Structure formats: structure tokens, C-alpha cells
Length: 84
Image: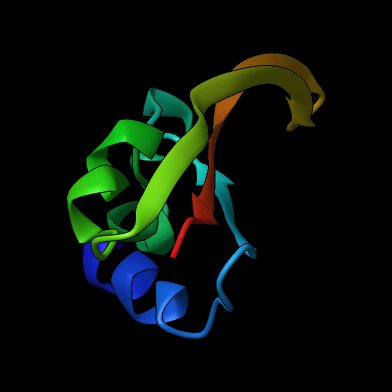
């Protein structure tokens, strides 16, 4: 995901924003095939090219219902602005 964030950033115009949102690692998803694509927002920072400033770097909690059971999970949110 670090590499993906870097590639996406190349398409952002000066003054524009890059928003990357996805699932944070969680025990709830460890058995799913897409668990390798989960990330913490701060883990993506090294992938941003020079000229980007982080605006939001956090995990945002939310609840979902899985198999009739309420589960609390986090979504990783990275918002960065291209300065120059």
C-alpha cells in the first residue's frame, strides 16, 4: 500500500489532495484474503513524494455487524496536500 499511495500521488496536481482510506489491520479480518491490503495511515507516509504535506493521518473507529454480531473496527485515513 505504501507503493500504491506513492503512485497515486503522482496524479495529484499542485494544490490538490490525495485521500486514501482503507481498513486498518484487525483481528476481525485476519482470516480474509484481503488482509494483506490493510494498513495504518502513518505507514503510508514514506510513500508520499516530496512536496506533500499530511493533513489527516489517523485511524477512525466505526462499528459493523458481522454474522449478527456488532464489531468495532478502524478505518485508516490519510489525507495529504500537494504543496508544490
